[in-house]
Image (cartoon, rainbow, N blue to C red):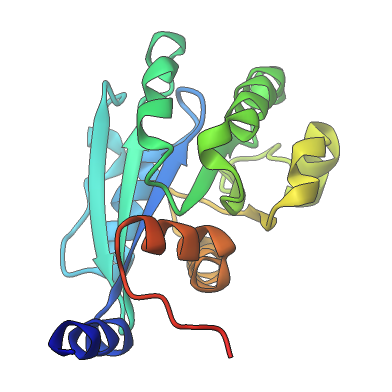
Length: 205
């Protein structure tokens, strides 16, 4: 009986921890995004853009809200490093996929890598936030233009959004994070991961 009430209390009052993958090909601005998230949502000052080096492996960032904790996994995007992405899929609640919107010559590579991510069975049902990054640069395409170019058929069966942002100056990031938190809170994938981890799951009425 104690364990039942403890599970209920824990479900109602503890903060939910969400794991969010930050993916994208190299030089898309993933680590710059992670550092800006630290600056915007915590007391930690993120690294300035001119001190950020390409990620080899994994960077982790944590931010805490009133009802939840977000753990961001920023993975290297070089071709030789993309094979490690799938090691993190099973525990991910959602995906943030970053694209350099100012560099159309690399859109095809970004699209190919994203399509492979979306086809992976371990990410079934995971919400996807596609960021058209580097809006601070001239020539960056809008989120709508990027969505038309990518034309991702795999998105039809999951929650998704395209958002124009600048990881450099922070524009659009709070709106993007608000959306990803909202959809993770009501995502069937979140419930599936909670049950798998042995957490409390309310009985449907």
